Length: 322
Length: 149
Image (cartoon, rainbow over all chains, first blue to last red; front, side):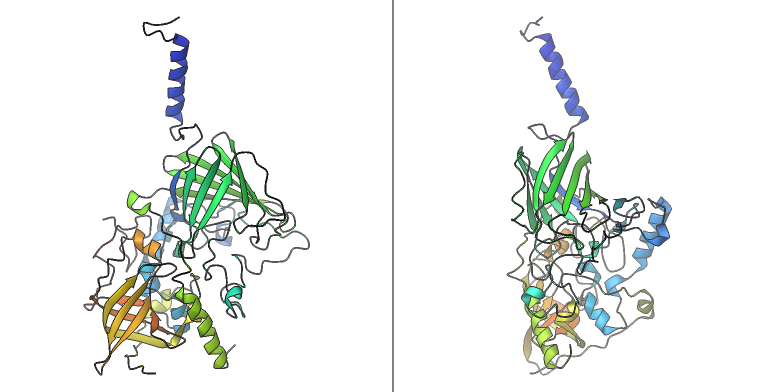
């Protein structure tokens, strides 16, 4: 049956239904997927693993959060001089150059296993040499022998995966910008000053690249499960915390919880490294517009520091130090 | 090489001994680049150029030495994105502005140092008050203005 505009009532009802659906899930792209787009910030500090002091406790109380923040507020941080000059120079900056995030309620990013700890290593696996990226690691003997032994970050090689907020003091792993299209998605990961990282996640059903091809940021494929984007990443050129690049995969679940919250859950799976898979959750929020801007990731051109590190190491060798 | 700049006395407040933070893992280990035995304290430094670049910003200053001669020094500062979100831009520090620099000279003894403390000649913290969008998700603490402006 039609009304005076000649539009069938059933069609009107269907249209109304769509409008209602849109109202219930307002964050949708024009093509109907959940809209994850925007610049997202990690706004609270949560440790990767649960401390012994918080054993058996998933969340802090509001009072405990307030007490922890009050303690942080008392700490003069980089405004305080250390009595040990070698320690003082290690910090190098005054407080305005660092971020001190508020304390999160979670006692660990790890939600599985429930004890908030990375599971034991698999039989035959060895502890990671440099858990946070390539090179020998900052401070490791021999790390400053030549440019290729220097850790990934001082070489401006960009963001190591899995891009976790492990060092929020230097805003590392804390800002990402998501741009979507129907068949692919891009995530720009801004990592303090180490150069950024651009991930492309294909969602058109294509298979992973050949296992012979390895990538710094891995090879990502995504698909929707309801309003959650599930992304599987393999083909890494370097592992995470010592994982075996042939068997390691990372499964992320991105969910827009509400207008101002993006939930990123990551499962790390490598039977050759860990006795079982383990998962973390990172909740990201939005900041006022003036801080939404993403900074250019160009890093090599201005990396005077790397020259300084190499020259400094040579001078120490000449002086007879190790 | 001439190194007639004033070597600063490291003042350690008692409270700092109690609250001093452990070494920080930053872009690089600063101790690899800068020499803790070469603290610098420039009381008369004039900004000549600001490089607002990754991985670190650099503030170039003309330092007037006690004998009246001038040396140009490069002072390493924070990464631009952190500064940007606090409302600090390349224009925050003006060419010609006088600042006081405390830091440590590079191990290769060139005219480079890290910006351990940057203050105005009147003792005011350099980046505070003059500008800032604030960072309300951060903890309020001494030395950093986190109020929204």
